Image 1 (cartoon, rainbow over the protein chains, first blue to last red):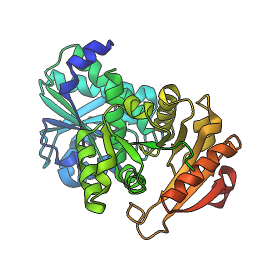
Image 2: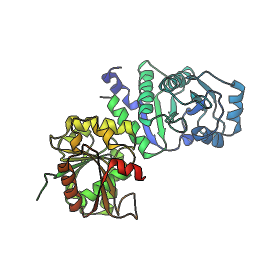
Image 3: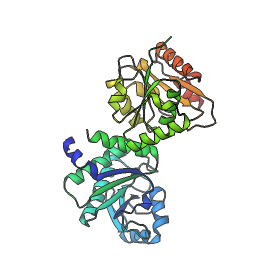
Image 4: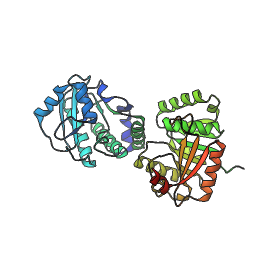
Amino acid sequence: MSQQSVKQIASRVAIQQGDLTEMDTDAIVNAANNDLVLGAGVAGAIRRKGGEAIQRECDAIGSIPLGYAAITSGGKLKARYVIHAASMGLGTLTTAETLRNSTAHALRLAAERGLKTIAFPAVGTGIAGFPMKECAEIMLHEAAEHLQKGSSLETIYFVLFDEQATGVFERTWKRLQG
Amino acid sequence: MTNGIQTIAVIGAGEQGRAIACDVLRAGYRTLLEDVSESRLQQAVDWIAKVSADARSHLVLASEIEEAVREADLIVEAVADEMEMKIEMFTIFDKFAKPNAILASSSHSVSIAELAAVTFCPERCIGMRFNSENGSRDGQANALELVTTFQTSQETVARCQEFGRRMGKEIMVVPEREFTESR
């Protein structure tokens, strides 16, 4: 991935501090486990705000392989869809590979449906214990690659919980642009 | 006596970085405050102006880390408290800092020795834990903890002590291992 080409898509990646579940994007991404059980962290917040319908749709899908993603409606959320990126199992932690693959798959699912906006959290950095810096590198790299290949997505948002995480994503994104 | 520290770079303008910058500015040091986010820099400027109206005149803002680091005699990083992030910072400092510059981390959790190990100047690496009356750690004493590793030189410690004294801080020198064990 050349630095020149990252610069060309730079304006299509937006990093901000805030509440993912309040995002008015076509889709928000859930930091899911591969059994699609919405428990703690981001998943719990989505379930509380989006309602039980999201969990029922997940139950209908069942388990998905690690590193894959699945799409459901957004329930009562402002976002129309929730894309569940399964970077961890119930009881297993996020790895670089499962994070990379589930991020890429989430982006593909969004593009297949012609979505224009999507918002990600820092997948895997909560209970899954994945380091924030490495998470930022992997997710931003996947986002840049996806946009460079051509996509319906106009803007990919990264919505971070606090100032520190936001700073890590901003610095990493700046570095990727060279 | 001056110890050669005249310009300080504070890397990261979040809550902690802006409090450190404010302390340093009030001691009359020329201060370069860096952040990749324009809006965070502006928030920091507004905050500093509110806490200390005259501090602003010595403040220089930087959006490029290399630019801030190049001019500084002392570099204090205040980025997210995570090892990988801080290692990246120290690698950049090592590459772009002046030959005699001191590289400091404000971390309360990351090992200074591990950060020093990625540089070619471990003798000039130190931990600086700011406790500020105006900062994010309100209510604590106005103190500066200097966290040393087995490689931190006496000269580095002495220069940092003088820096701390000029800021009117109570100074404590804490060897890293002892510090870790006491927590």
